[in-house]
Amino acid sequence: MPSVLALDSGTTGATALVIRDDGKIIGRGSRELPQSFPEPGWVEHDPIEILNAIVAAAREALAAAGEWPAGLGITNQRETTILWDRKTLAPVAPAIVWQDRRTAQRCRELKASGVEPRVHHLTGLVLDPYFSATKLEWLLREPSVRRRADAGELAFGTVDSWLITRLTGGRVHVTDHTNASRTLLYGLQSRRFEPELLELFGIPAVVLPGIVDSSGIVAETDPSMLGRSLLIAGIAGDQQAALFGQGCVRPGSAKNTYGTGAFLLTHTGDRPAWSSQGLLTTAACGPRGEPAYALEGSVLVAGAALQWLRDGLGILSTAAESESMARSVADTGGVHFVPAFAGLGPPHWEPEARGTITGLTRGTTRAHLVRAALEAMAYSSADLLDAMLRDCSAGLGVLRVDGGGSSNDWLVQFQADILGVAVERPEIVDSTAMGAGGLAGLALGVWPDMDAFISARRVRTFEPGMSAAERARLRSGWARAVGAAVTWARGSLAWSRAPE
Image: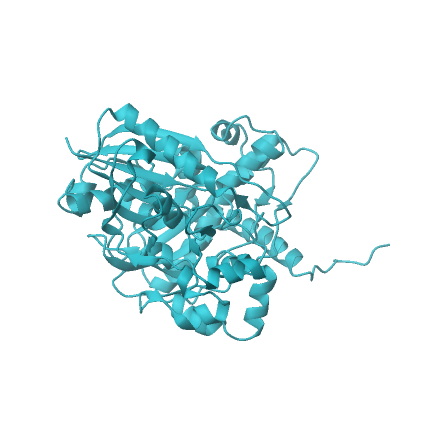
């Protein structure tokens, strides 16, 4: 039976799936990916480790499948910025991860200059360190690097471009519309890198990748990488791939992915929709993988909060343990955890915010903290959905969820309760990889159309059971905690009374 290889290069790990045309996973591989934090607010990867992780995961999946697929699709952590030598393919510097905040001051300067409305009009984005442009500008600050870039000796790319370049032995340097739309250099309506934006950020056009459709044959891998040549036929940023993998390809359909961060997207069709609530307009894929649009809101830290509780504080052995710990207490004991380790994204957009825990008492236990971290994922996602629905002026009958965090039944039920809508989880929660596989499979003929691809999808539905009054009470407490984090960041915390 025909199959396709899906490669998912994420923020904390790499996953590879071999997906048969009946939707079954016949091969799986995975590798963890370390991050480094050289200074407060800085987050980096070694680009070679990104490559090695995805190649190892792919080889493991192919060995488990015992067959060669028709080709492969790639999905990736977005915005992460890599600069490399075109001849040697060696990275010039560590990859600057999407979570990195080192360019916060530069973004403030640009906002103060009054250019943000124009940038937003062109890109659908805001001036924030999240996106690639100021990261690339930072990498080019060194005169020697700038000279090499201007001379065409260097290449820039997000993780998809980096992997395609390395998998093809340097022959192909491309990205797709979904990844390009996250650079702060791409015009949503022109569907090209905008010269006006390149000038604003001082980016030489010669370093940029070509832009291709998300579904279509674009390259062939070097046989030395995976053991045999494979056609690369699908490319999409992770959240757009998950939207496609969940079958959300028509206006009004929405999904939320719980990973390192949490990402909520609503498909808006073949025309961009503009937000009045601080959300992003971004490129997405239509039913054939063609360019389309979506509204997006992101929680910068979701599952990463559990990783911190595990690795930083040692109060969890594994992330999976969080479910039983959350169930072991009736509530959080008044504790709220706002995990703004990398600032707050929409609708607050406060890059200087940092992790905040409120309501601690002598009776607070590790179970309360763990439950508060899980609740934070649901509350933050609910804030985003509220803003999104105000922009769309429409109701939502069901929210589709995926990602590693969605395997936690307690979290998914709490999400349904706090939203007051049904939440639908697929049997295979790797929707990001499934979407990459689907985009490649459509181009390669593994599936004739979107309906055939999505037909094998099996789901479980979680219905809300919380009263409206309880929902309002809980969300009010969360809003108060977020307010504390924002107030602290902006340096205007007022004491209720003077110290005695």
